[in-house]
Image (cartoon, rainbow, N blue to C red; front, side):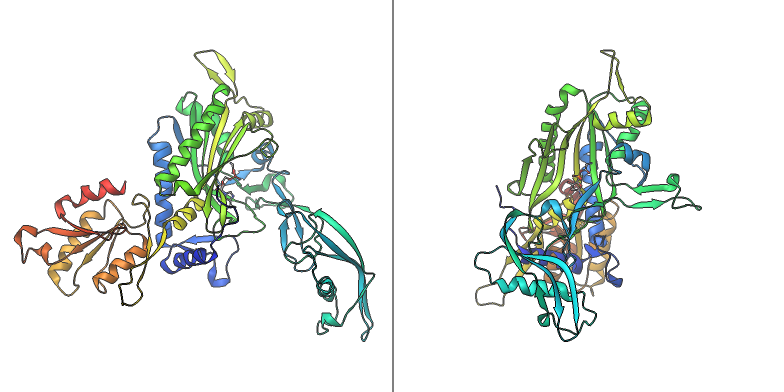
Length: 527
Ligand code: GAP
């Protein structure tokens, strides 16, 4: 089992920097200082994202007879989210640091022990200023200098000074007492400052609909969906009636979800606007647990096919008491990101909870009628719920590699290469005429480009030396470079006419292939 705390900050910084430099991912509204928790995918990122979504759809919808697609609306009726339990229930307990105002998830604060220093207020003799307010600081290390607690307390009280020019050091603290604390969670682990009491923080984005939207009109209120799952449950009956599917079957959806996360962090990992790739797989109750295990195996295999290292994937079997009350089984699939082992996807057996809740709230029957057994019942559901942006982030982290190609006695030569699987690489092939000032080479190269372009994303590049062009493609993960050289023209050896050199990104090996074989050769490898 990988260590959850094992991190590689330098590697992560290089990946984030490459993403911006090469046009994979940009901070949203960067021009205006950035919109926290929101990201824009640049030209290469947009293609990478599209390829991952297309591949997921192909494997889960196109190549299966038992799963159908759905594309539900993002704006969601409040009745849907009331029935699902999101309204009134989808919140995190938060507390604020009284010193820095940093907001922390109360349930994620590790218990700490140590000596707490309590104060009743502070004063500034020269100006006559004083304040009466209780405040505490925890020193959680053995033999810590107690003056550290006093310094923190003075900084806290100094926030209330009318004259901000007065140094906190000039304050006199009042009413100091101490107490020994064991496993407490009401102090900021970063600076020891007392925290506020936890308060619930609403995670959903609410909006008003219609031209005459009135803030007080409950019918004008809608929400940006916090998960794609709910429109699947709400349209379940329409899908059954219109498609005449039989259990077991699934409904799949890819789309945006929105959560007002308190602490968006780790690049795109925890965002406020993100995309999910979810399947609700409906089944008979007796098949639920078996199918949950089958889906877990299926999803792990999926991640391997898009290039994630098996050793970096971990399964957490969520124990009783930590799962949602309606779930009989939940697995988290986690990945070793450079910032630690973190969740990629959840595979949950949700029983008949969701359809049951919507049936109850809407008053409309959502039961399934089994023609064979003449039974009527609410199907159970298994939910593999993946994050698209997290999958992209894992793929970027996995693909990033640096190779030292320095020759003995030579200048340092580090090759940066993104080892994307060809099926998800943003650009499948680069077409490179050896020289740009040789019209026959350029013309042939453009012919090759025109041949391939209707079938795949290719990139034509005629600037700089061929070696540099190869390296540029390595850095963006193009699996194949196709060089059009003098042999292609058949000038020296007629048998090589209309052949090209293919250079493989990972091995850097080269081979010659006839232009007439190029398209099937590539199509076979980029699927
Ligand atoms: N329908 C179930 C559901 O939404 P979830 O565990 O809250 O379950 C499923 O979310 C997946 O969606 C997560 O495993 C993660 O990959 C992705 N996800 C959730 N919140 C996210 C966020 N704030 N930013 C990026 N991805 C997120």
